[in-house]
Image (cartoon, rainbow, N blue to C red; front, side, top):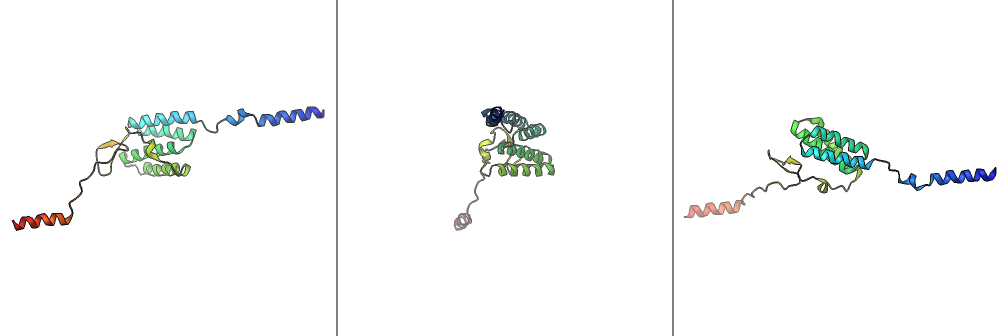
Length: 154
């Protein structure tokens, strides 16, 4: 009887330490990646509501900084296009969540280049991550004064 009890204890203990149990994932990262990819594709198509739904599913499946950032971006664009204050607030919340998960998160490596958004002060859309057009620097006042003085002397 004692041997059977010891043997049963060893079986239970070894089952608790089995590698199969250690390999189980806490989150469904494959589903999250599929939702995230779907969300990015919907952003490219400018279907912001559907993109938000897909990215919210990605966050629910496996919360990570990239998904939260893209979700914040989708809310940001929606709020910018519609003037919806709630979407802008949700954008900030999701951006903050991305940086809470990973304070060193760098969104530059996750920005799809063909998703477009208006640059500051522009009405046209340009690829996200593309440099804003350079403004011509005004001439220094001394150069303009020198030119005006030269014209007066002539």
